[in-house]
Image 1 (spheres, one colour):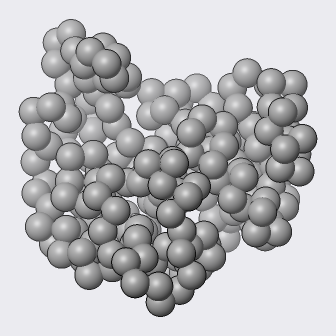
Image 2 (image 1 turned 60 degrees about the vertical axis):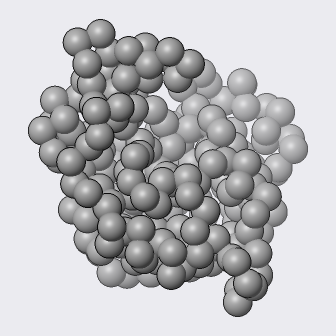
Length: 231
């Protein structure tokens, strides 16, 4: 597949490395410009591009940037793109650590539904509940005992199947979370978040999730702080 990756932090750079190694054609972008991605491009064979260049011609685009920076992406980034372009959101809302208060999410809107509205294009939620190092190192062949499972949520059945196939290709068992409104079940603080469970464990964790965010995952008047000192 032709894959655009917008964001070259821990998850974005890991996916760039893993997906190019699997033979996919990857274009990777960040907020600082293609010249800052020369090392990653040389290492992986990915093309370093601007965010606006990562989308046209792609079969699938992965948006993996801090929640608070989603509205700062180039205006109309997905305008005029085909309806069947698959867009994956890996993001998480960290109000006390990084993002500050996002009113709609605090009021109960699922994180990826908010991202979808900012982008103006449907999204699939995936790759948000696993540490980047584990995504890089802990993939296993299909049917391996103890294979980690990753939840995938979205409204479009075809797009979700493609993303679940990519999860499997990367060495993890995909588990269907349901439509995007159910993606809250895999957000920070939920039983499946960074838990590295197998498929049955993920299904149980999704069922056990509670909609209300715990206080440590809600904004405060002093938000944001840092990951070392949440506000």
